[in-house]
Image 1 (cartoon, rainbow, N blue to C red):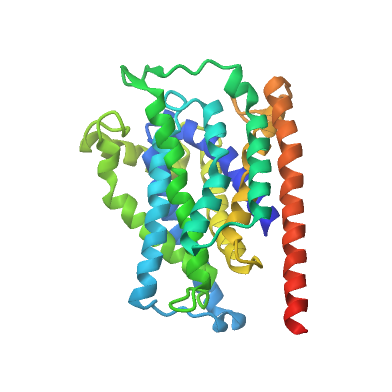
Image 2 (image 1 turned 60 degrees about the horizontal axis):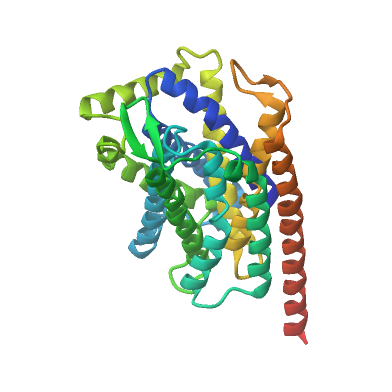
Length: 363
């Protein structure tokens, strides 16, 4: 499951860059991308949930309307997903947060997860997890050493598309804070899965993902005004926002203006739905009491793998073999050599601890 989630998230991160570039050139917007991802994942998981319901082995899961207390929890998870998407897509353009800095800020997802997990579960993190979190964070910082020391990152950046000068520090903080709802979402879902009262573990992961994406779509639909905020959103008024949504919808269905635009969209939709369900399975079936921390450690390798992929391929004019190597690729590889062994050793030690606990309880 961890390997599947890592590969799926890496695939989504790679495809969304090409899909977003083609989408914006066709008149769409970043806000449409996150809304489209939620809507299509909602539709896809609904179809898969119906198919699972029709299967003989699907009868062991509950598919009825969740009670109100469960529905509240699913709404919270879906809303957190929506806020994460909005904050990240609006802050991620290169003229707002430099791509090299985005990788550095993403390195703090692991220690943030350890902290939030400790606050939610009201217990101190284990020394093992603290050590591995520190090693992984160090490895990620090594990966982006050229971005930290070799690139110019002034506190002010000129936004040429909007004709204004905005503080890159503001957008960097906004991008960094997008990890807060994402982290809370994972930790809360783990808590909801394992709570003794009102647990969602009796429902199929497909069913849970269906409701999460339903509420995420609702939040993003009624939160369109976020895309209208001055110097924050990508639309100046409701008319321009509607034009962006229409252009984005046309491009998503037809790929108009890009030869492989429709294919990019299909791969993006499938990988997004796959990651939602794999993440749920990982949080549900990971042994031990810190599944969200383990997931954050696994996801930390995505940035390094993406960097190495772009060392071998180029996206312009189309994805093609174009190997090139520089100092950034070297440090990305060094960082992965630190991060990946730490992830493997952490999992091995966690499994040994579970086995020891099982033996001790049986004596």
